[in-house]
Image (cartoon, rainbow, N blue to C red; front, side, top):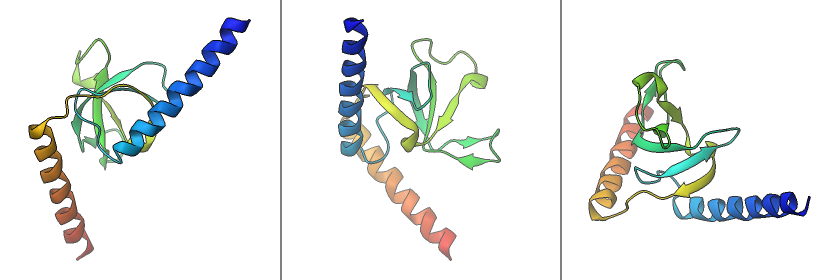
Length: 119
């Protein structure tokens, strides 16, 4: 019984750590990050940004991901989700100069697109 209590306490500590990490990445974790979604049972790995989901009325999401550790099996298995759907972070993908430059350019493009929508 005590082991279960320890696991629950440990899980809570890991979730708190994930929340702290999410604060450092207000939006858009690097490609390759491994996360668990709220109400999720299986970990997934981020493979891209801003996908448009066909199943959800062409709604745009923050991320697209595949199952982890299986990887991309079929495109039918892609998972579209938003940043606020993340419950727990298991690994952060590579964050280097190239990734940071890409993020900067993507966020600028998003701002321009939002400005055009307002007009």
